Each structure stands twice: as C-alpha cells, then as structure tokens.
Image 1 (tube, each protein chain N blue to C red):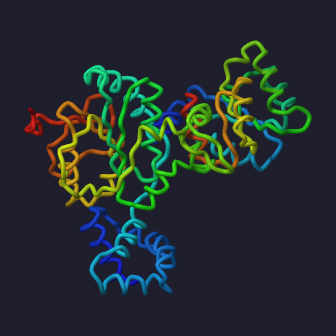
Image 2 (tube, rainbow over the protein chains, first blue to last red; image 1 turned 90 degrees about the vertical axis):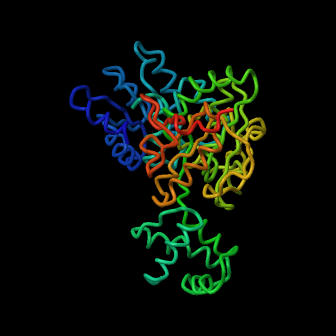
Image 3 (cartoon, rainbow over the protein chains, first blue to last red; image 1 turned 180 degrees about the vertical axis):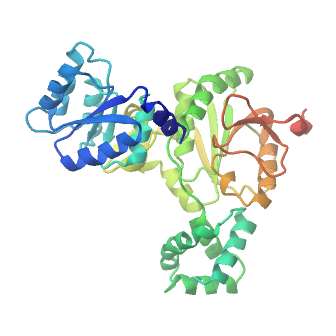
Length: 135
Length: 271
C-alpha cells in the first residue's frame, strides 16, 4: 500500500512516535507490532499516570489509549493531556473493549481524534491511522 | 475436488461471471464451497459438483459462482478517490446538472460498504445523489440491503464520528440510518450483460472488479460500463487498476489515480 511505503521511506529521516497506553502487555505487544509496521517508533505505558509522566517529557505524535486501566483511566489521562502545553497536538485514538455508542461519543467529545473498538486488526488500525492523518 | 472439477469451475466462472479463477485459489475454492454444499443438502463438495456437472446451470450453479467471487471490500477503500469525489466531482456535477440529483452506479458493490461510503460522502458534501449498487451475488446483496455491519466491519475505513453519525447501534451490529438508505438502491446485475435500457449514470464506481476479471471478458465489461456512462461522466477503478484489455473506451485523468473519463473514440453516443 502507498501509505506504508511512504512511511518506511521517511522513517530514517524523521522517526514519528507513538505511545501505546494499555494495562495489558499482550495488547501492547500486538499493537506495537502493527504500529511499528506503519513506520512509528513506539513507547509503552501501562496506565494513564505512566502515560502522563511520559508526556511531561516528550509528547508523541500519536497516542493509542485504552479506557479502563488501574491508577488512572484513559478518559482522565486524555483530559489532563489536552490541558498540557502542546497537549492538543497528538492524535489520540481510543482503543478499548467499550463499544456502546454513548461511551464512544463521550470519548470523542473529551478530545479523542478517533476510536477503535476491540477486537481490532492491522487493517483496522491502519485505516484509522490514515483517517486521522497520522500516516 | 479433482483437477478436472477445478478446470470446469474455471470455465464456469469465466463464461457466466467473467471471473478469472486462478489456480492458486483451488484450496480457497474448496473451502468456500463447503458451506454451499451443506446448505444445498450435499454430503460433500465433490457430490455437489458431480450433480452440478450433470445438469444445466441453474440456482445451484449460481450459488457456486457467488461463493467463488471475491467479496472483499471496506468503507472508504482508497480514501483519495472518495476525497476527489466529495471535494471536486460532486460539486462540479451538481452544478452541471442544475440541481438534479447526480446518478451514481456502484458496479460490483459486494456487501455494500462502498455504496454507503459514496452515500455518506455525498450527504456530507451536501450533494443530491441517487445511487444504484449492483452485484452478481444475491447473498452479498442481502447483507448490503440489511445495512448491518459488525464492529469489525464498520470500523474498517470509517472514523468513529462518521460511524456514530450515519449508523445506529443495535446489539452487536451497526445499521445504516434511514436517511442513508433512502439514497441507495441495491439490485442484482451481471457486468457481462449489455444494458437492456438506456438509463445512464454520471459516475460509475467499479473498483477492484476488473482486476479479477478474465482478460478475455474484460473488454465486454468495459464496453458495458461505457454504455451506461454519460459522455461527460467519470469512472472510478481501483487506484492501481487499468482498463486494460484492448479497450479504448476510457482514458485516465492525470493526477487522479483510478479516475477515468471516456476517450474521444467512445463519444459516439453524443446527442
């Protein structure tokens, strides 16, 4: 696919970054493999507070965000992220098991750019990245 | 399935559907025909095929053909084409038609994602369209008409916001809203059949269909598409598809991958 070729071509010059926030190590591993395939450099966080600490240093270009996590959930993280200096810049994609329309709407109105319902696969994630203009 | 069975399937697919069943799809064919055999009350695929070869092609034959077509599709497949459509073509055509709805044909719509994508693009661009979406497969059309998609299907290509705007959630399915349904009409059609009336379209989407066509039947299909298209209309193929064959009906539009217009040689039906 064209988009994939393009991202690989620019990878060595400007590595784009993606933070994957999920309390499941397996989900992080699966998502990492897909996102790396799109040409991103990937970091991981296991909950919202870890992610927030990470974003205090360097803000990634894309954040893949689980909803329900221990310590700090995804929605709380998102609201705090958007209040940080530079916090409006990253594309945030919720990626969760929650599939009710009203919860999806809630996440979008809290500032998420898009929403991925689990289960997902590489094709879905790729198309979501394309739709938000991340690739 | 014997090699002889596969040869016969190949020629059945080519003669009836213009579809090129390549040899590497033998395993896939066997896999797809299992459920057809069960549904039709046969013990095995081999028994079904034996019965199929013994009689003229009827409903069983068409069930077999349907199962072997390539149904893959998703929402907004090749996003650039939909952006060209919504941003450039629909506004221009809407103006040229003086407020009359733009007529679009999705030829080979499979399970309907492309027809809905077109309907959404038009509505969001504020353009009036009438969409006819056709396929050879009755089963694919049933799903298309239902407008119901799983979570897996609905989010392949659609942003969550678009999904919430145009689909209602019911249990595990996402169902196209009435306002969307009002613009799309689904019907069965075979691209090998020449037009039987003079209804013509402003836009034809026939994407990722010719790529699977038997090269020997491609010219007929293109000719039939050309006859259904108004002289100043547009044809969308997949971004990497070419009309090919020996057809001179269409020429590519520079800078717009997958977009074609009639070549001067095809303007023979000008009023």
